[in-house]
Structures are given as structure tokens and as C-alpha cells.
Image (tube, rainbow, N blue to C red; front, side):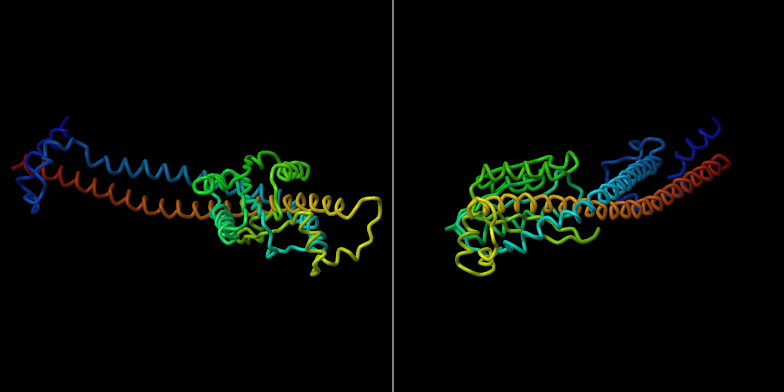
Amino acid sequence: MAMAAIRREGRRYAPLLFPRPNAAVRSSLVSEEDVPFGARSISTQVVRNRMKSVRNIQKITKAMKMVAASKLRAIQVRAENSRGLWQPFTALLGDTPSVDVKKNVIVTISSDKGLCGGINSTSVKISKALHKFSGPDKETKYVVLGEKAKAQMVRDSKKDILLTIAELQKNPLNYTQVSVLADDILKNVEFDALRIVFNKFHSVVSFLPTISTVLSPEVVEREAESGGKLGELDSYEVEGGETKAEILQNLSEFQFSCVLFNAVLENACSEQGARMSAMDSSSRNAGDMLDRLTLTYNRTRQASITTELIEIISGASALEG
């Protein structure tokens, strides 16, 4: 009761004993009577709540980084092993991105979740650049894998999207799953060349945007007859009763499934690596923000204590006088 009376009297006489030099400059919209008692503690409470929020976000980002690291280790081994599937096809059929065809289908591979840097935006930009430079006299369509690329490409290229596939990584990726997906794509689209756009994994902090080209059996046969690297196909001896067209058909389908399997795994590795880097940066930024908020909190708290001491001393001096 006595302390409350001292504070009450101190607030009454403090403006007379210690007038503020800038009192006349203050806005008339806020008067001294409108400020509630204990208003100085509001700022410290706001800073404390902000510190709690930032600390919780930091815990989440650290946990997401650990989860991404665990998933990356599981996918990286399979991605490295899958590189041996498509390399024999590259040696046999080649990878000719400059081949001139009428019907192009761009297969854009992205992730279903965000918070992984700019890997999805990179794939979308490359896909749109391929569509732009294909020329107006050629037919170019999209096949989109992943929600993030779909959300970006639907805005201005919805009419060119033939097929969209999401939740590809809901279950652990295996060749059987991807081969069924490749078979669905081959049945639903007509193409002369498939351009697969994905991010090739190099390290946790490095990935390389890559384009792999898979030609249709007709184009492979045409290119083989015209010479060049694909002309070496005629030097192979074919056993069995299958014709050359049937063999090229089987090779083209198997090549696409192998390249797509490797591309999906490489992109999944790049996604987890980019998410690790993004969450690590977020955790460091949260730590820096916590340091600044702690400094602000201590300064505000010290200012509040100093102000209360001045009020108490002023009130006691007023009562004694």
C-alpha cells in the first residue's frame, strides 16, 4: 500500500519536478491520462514473445535440417547406383539435345514441398526457355512432375500442359514405380523428342541443372540412316526374330524409364541438399535475431527499471518536501 501511494504521488508531482523539454512537441492525440499504469512493461512483454517465437522457429529449422540429412543419405546411394542404367544408352544412342524435331515434350521434374531454395524455379525457367526457343512452327508441350513446378507453370502455360503428376516421393522411389510412370507418359503423349529437365546432384551445396534427351524410335531410325553418331547402330548384329523397328521401340522405352528413374533420384538428392542448406541458413539467421532481440530486451528492461527508480525517488522527495 505504501509503495503504491509513493508511486501514485510520484506520478502526480514528477511532471512538476522534472518537466520534459519536448512536452510541447508531443501530439495532442495522446494525453498522459490515456496511458495506463504499467504501460512500460508492454514493450518487454512484446520482445519476450518475439524471442519465444524465434526460438521455436529455430528448433523447427534445426529439426528439418536433421530430417533432410537423413533422407539425403538414404537417396544418395540409390542415385549414384542409378547412373549406371542410362550411361550404356548414352553410349549407344547418344544424347543429342540439338536434334531438330517437330514435336517436343518437356518433362519438368520438381518437388512436392518447398523450403528447398531455388531448385524448382531453376527447372521451371529452363523448361520455359526450351519452349521459347523451340520456335513457333514446332509443337512443344509439357509434362510436369511435382506440385511446385505445376503451381508455377499453370499461371501462364496451362494450355501447353499435357500431364501433371504429384506426390511422386510419397513412398520410397524404386524402378518399378518410375517405370509404370514412364509407361503412362509414353501412352498419353505423342513426341519426337522428350526433354527431361532436372537438377543433377553434385554435393550438399551444389547441383547442376541438366537436360537429357530421349528420341522416339522413328527419329532414332531417321538419324541412324542419315549418319552421324547414331549411324553406328547398323554395325551391331541383332539376334532373334525382331525387326529393327521393334528393337528401337523397346530400346527407346527402356531408355526413357532408366533416364527418368535417374533424373527423379538426382532431383530428390538435390532437393534434400538444398533444404539442408536453407534450414541451416535459417537456423543461423534465427540465432542472430535472438541475439539482437536479447540485447533489445535487456536495454528495455534496464530503461524500465531506471524509470521506476526515478519515479520512486521523485515521489519520496515530493512527500518529504
